[in-house]
Image 1: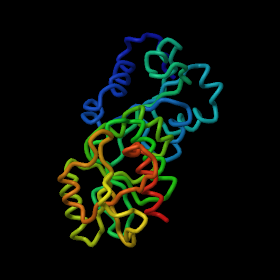
Image 2: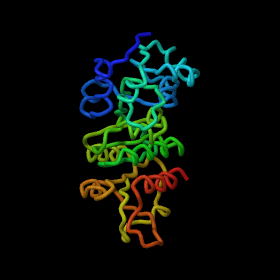
Image 3: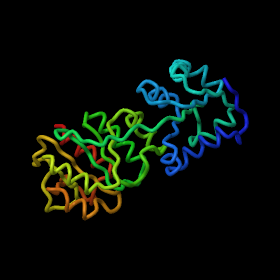
Amino acid sequence: MEKITARTNEKIKYAVRLGESASFRKQNGEFFLEGARLCFDAAKTGVEIRQAFFTAAALEKYSAYTRSIIATGCICCEISGDVAKKLSDTENPQGVFCICKKKESLSVLNCNGKYLALENLQDPSNLGAVCRTVEALGLDGLIVSGGCDVYNPKAMRAAMGSLLRISLIETDNLIQLLEEAKSNGMNTYASVPRSDAQDIRKADLNGGVIICVGNEGSGLSQAAIDTCETAVTIPMGGRAESFNASAAAAILAWELMR
């Protein structure tokens, strides 16, 4: 196993850039993972791990996890604690890092499936939380259009491995996807904080359904609202004007699967 002690090592600089730059991740088709459990989840899920970095302490402390990662046949390097701090964006790094191949985005929806669609979500923590909800409640997949990169390290941590396991559909044209879904018999709903929208509890959520959730600040675009067949809302009894995006998505997903 190669040993790396220099923060300026080319492999380390490449890994750091993957973690920092969405455009670099897209260009290279790879993403960066940090954490013993997350990297283990990648190995267990069958994600292609191309490089792995471990501190000596991590190889001992997290041996059950690191053995599984090493067994994938990826290029493995032992790194110093100083290099681990360079790679990490957490205060107390565990000393386990991986470079993985991005999974293929699905191109075809299950016309009888249940999906959440996120439009221009900006907070990676919200995105990660929605991914956990999608997996936990058993939705058929998550549609992501615009906003933060799904492979943002903060999104990955917030998802707790769910992003590696759920069916993911990334699209640059949510409107076209919704139109195609409708033509295939799916019901499309726009989630909006409006009193004149239909109560989500009374909506017909049978068959194939897509419920759209918008940006944290401005909500769904008018184009998305106009394209969806029905506007739905979550009734609120308090003084808050709206829910946090990930909280709204969780409630909508619960109703969708209930």
